[in-house]
Length: 242
Image 1: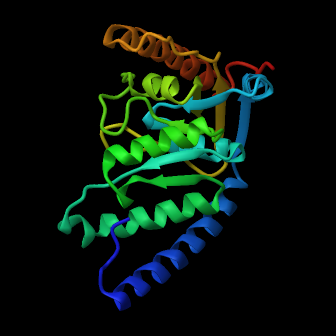
Image 2 (image 1 turned 135 degrees about the vertical axis):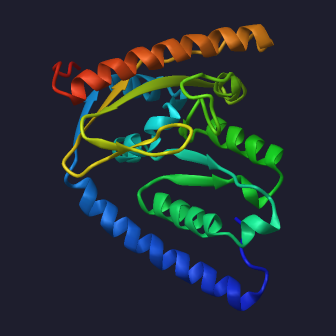
């Protein structure tokens, strides 16, 4: 995390962001209480854990914020990084990121902050944590798109961490859409959020570019289908199954 080098400023930064995160966590807890969460297919999680398999949950970047309200009970690991520049360290984005990371920790997520070292080392640490048994949450079209196009990185991480990938479709009936590249959605109070878990994808031993791209394409297809199903559940057009 990009913290001030001056000891006094660092203390103010740490204290201020911690207080803001506590306030944000309280507001989100009240906000969360108004939401209705509908879940379908979460037996896949229990089956995977019953087989002592590591897993990565894959969610489109658009829906990560909405999904966070329904996935917090899984004790998930999230990867985070930021630009390593002096301008970023002094920016409001640095403060908001720090508040966001601490808020996620308060909500039950663990954040692996790759900015503490080299980016490549951060990714390797993320893979090691998953291999050790920590489930993770990843957006296969992140961090910068294109939207709804799965990159092979998630499949590669799953292979290297001896994990399976479980795609999760997300829908929300009452929301606002952000202006970012991913058109991220934020559920409004009293919204219904639907989470639909797909079948686990076991990565192939073949890590060639062609094989990874083929499996990423299959994950993309599953995610799209699951999101359509989740949309119908959230809008009351279908009833949830097991």
